[in-house]
Image (cartoon, rainbow, N blue to C red):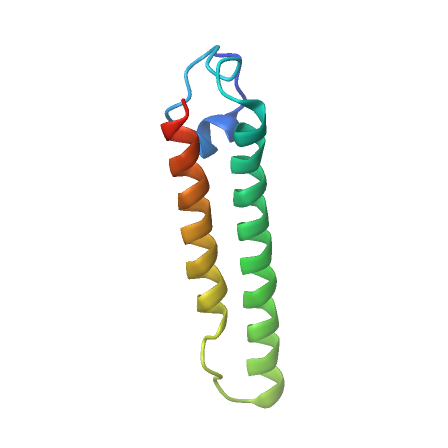
Length: 86
């Protein structure tokens, strides 16, 4: 296998063995934090929206899409910065 975990290979498919040592640590960590925050907040928003729909008995506008889309843009920005600085 390699020295990177399966999660690291999923989050950073272009990562080669030994590459993390040459990448700035702060940006490498920022990429993982951005992905984790985006996925967590998106999941929380989706669950809250589903609860509102179940309690009210009708479909509410999918307002959680705003956080998913904006979060995806933020993750893409962090990913782009880290790829430029590689």
